Image (tube, rainbow, N blue to C red; front, side):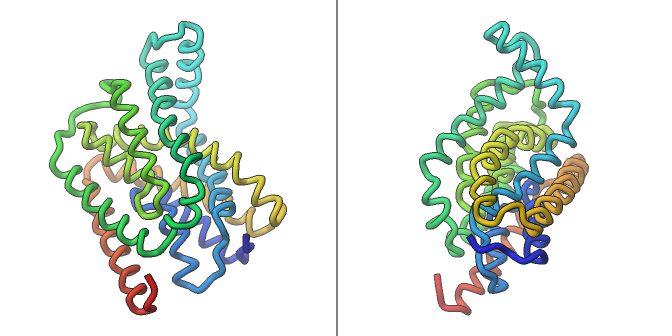
Length: 272
C-alpha cells in the first residue's frame, strides 16, 4: 500500500464521507481520483480504513434509532422471534447483511483488482444511474419501513452485493431496490443507511489492521478518518432533508456525467 500525503488523505476522506451515503458510489470516487490526478493508489486497506469515520458519523446521527434497535435485538434473542417493530427491524438488518457478507468473502480478490478498472467503474456509474432514475420515477412510493417484510429485507440485502463493483454504489443499489419494492424515498434511504452499519463495521475491523501494519497510526490516516466522519454526517443530513421533497434524479444525472467523463479520459489516454 502506498501511503497518501496529508492533502491526498484529506481529499479522499472527504470524498469517502460525502459519497458513501449519496447514491453516487464512494468506491468509484476513491478508485478514480488517484487515477485522474496521477497519484499512487492508496490501496483498498486505506480506502476501507476511512470507513471508521463513516461509521462514527452513522452511529452518532442515528444514535436514538440504534438504541431502539439494540433493545429490539435483545428481545429478538430472548424470544427467538420478533415481538415488536424494534425487534423486527433488528431482524431485517441482520437478514439484509448476510448476502453482502458472503459476497465480500467470496469476491474479495476481484473487488481489489478486476472490479477497480476505470472502464468497469464508468459503465457501472451510468447503468446504475439509469436504473435509479427509472425506478425512482415510475414505482409507487407509499410504503413505510413499518410495512417491510423479511423478503423485502433480503432482496435489499442482495442488492447490496452489487456494491463490490466501484461505480454501482452501496447506497445507490439498496435505495434503488427499496424504491423498486415500493418504499417511499425517506424509508428507502434510512433503511439503506442503517443496514450499512454491519458491513462498514466488518470492513473496518478486517482492513484497518492491514493499514496500521503498513503505515502505523499515521497523520494521513488520522486526517482521512476525521474528514470522512465530518463529511459523512453532512451527507446523511443533506440527503434525508433533500428527498423529503425531491427525487433522486439529480444523482442519476451526476452519475451519467461522471461516467461520461471517465470514458472520455479513458479514450484520451488510450487505455481501457
